Image: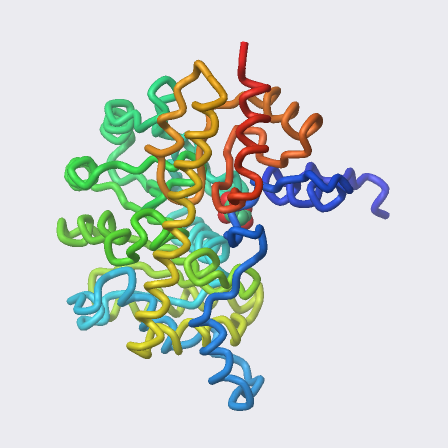
Amino acid sequence: LFGHVEPAPKDPILGVTEAFLADPSPDKVNVGVGAYRDDNGKPVVLDCVREAERRIAGNLNMEYLPMGGSIKMIEESLKLAYGEDSEFIKDKRIAAVQALSGTGACRLFADFQRRFLPDSQIYIPTPTWSNHHNIWRDAQVPQRTFTYYHPESRGLDFAGLMDDIKNAPNGSFFLLHACAHNPTGVDPTEEQWREISYQFKVKNHFPFFDMAYQGFASGDPERDARAIRIFLEDGHQIGCAQSYAKNMGLYGQRAGCLSILCEDEMQAVAVKSQLQQIARPMYSNPPVHGSLVVSIILNDPELKSLWLKEVKGMADRIIGMRKALRENLESLGSHLSWDHITNQIGMFCYSGMTPEQVDRLTNEYHIYMTRNGRISMAGVTTGNVAYLANAIHEVTKT
Ligand code: LMR
């Protein structure tokens, strides 16, 4: 019956973790998946999360959440993305549901897009997180790409980006990374975001923000919502996928939120009911534990400020490792420029290494990363940075 089923290709990101785990070498280093590690290379559970869990313990029943998830968690998520005093929240113009982290939020939106705007396409930046392509493919929404990254400068190709926005048919859907672009670590400046927003207005495009790293770009979640706020000020309707995987370290809890800013409350009620309708036959309702952790933390001023401190701590450790990696490469006498390691922001460094160079890192040095040259800076530690720099130098020197 299933004889025709071929093995699926390995996932370009999660497949790296599988290969890393299978390697018995004591020297092995995993800078593949974007998952934060402490300076000893260990996974981190934030103190604010531990405290929230302590408060939950014993008080939690195992009842179903509503199809749309926890109302409290959604309320707190909207404040985080749209602003504490957002008029759109007060006016109940936002349709929002709890989602299975950022991936689930994107997928719900893609399915919604397919169902209600069947002739639309999605413009996706080049490059982007590899799973974006899978998500819109499986939702059967046709994909187009738009220019984003400039390989020579290892920065933003702003002119190319603006051209593609102008040349897309009016009313196109665009996927934008709200902050800490994955994989490049390259974000538009505030001024550039304003120009992008202006052009979106002229073209009547719809921006869908994937905000998987709120807090990881600047260390401050409020600042990292700047791009979204600019679009809101300019009067756009937007969509937004939020994830608590990275900024609360809730990776496996699958806690996230999908929101769509509608024209009025009535429309928001209708849109939310349809999002729930999409969720119901897929997973019925979302998991309860992560949503409780999120709402407890964001709803308690003390826990929230502890969280903000801890997010900043994670972002700062990564910035420190960027400096250390660059300095190590420079002191090894590398003739290449490594400025981009410290210029790029967020969890990743888009190193510019070729797939062949990455293969050498893996085969000769047991260093695991995605073949597009992306280094998860969250996996770099004071203990492995010299080893990593030396290996990078060896495979990149001519
Ligand atoms: C990543 O890009 O490494 C993360 O977003 C993890 C994932 O699911 O791919």
